[in-house]
Image 1: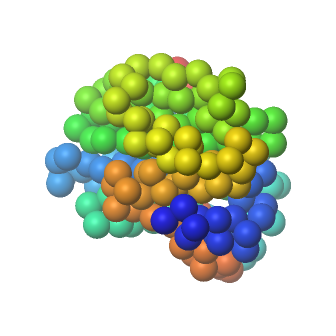
Image 2 (image 1 turned 180 degrees about the vertical axis):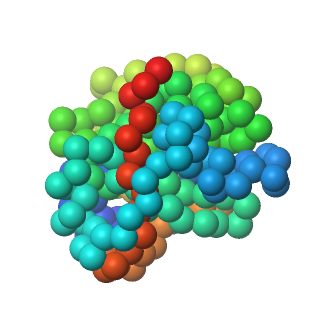
Image 3 (image 1 turned 45 degrees about the horizontal axis):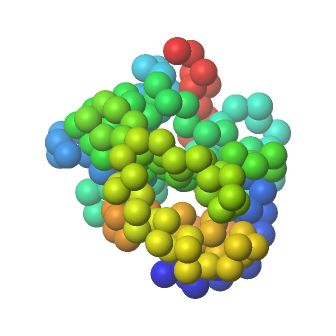
Length: 198
């Protein structure tokens, strides 16, 4: 699975500059994607737009731009313009009656993986690509399999470590990401304008 994401990053090298991948598994089947987007936008309906060339146009926004993906009982939200990390208060709201996994990074670093459930952040690992600087919070058993993936990689295999974050989330949720999903034109996107309102 790590190799699948290595190939994705090889084909989509811009992906390594900044992204936030959030996967939500609602435990209540009545929770809809509109409910999740409302939570993601801090309690307001976000803007829906079609972008002719999303990868290029997203960088003209000063706001998070999301692709939305549907899995089997699972939703994936990819913020791909600057690697805007979903704020903690939004993640805790998303995790009410749901399980939430997130990984994020941006051009200045911020390599983070996180798990939230029952309205609380349960585990977080920061700076996961730098073994000597990794900071782990919460229940270490939740991310133990991820740490094992990292330990099998060479210390400077940064692409492998980014790939491991996606592989771990896919193994945990069944929700993956395919390279061809990113090569889209005239695609629907969601613009988030209320992330930073606590």
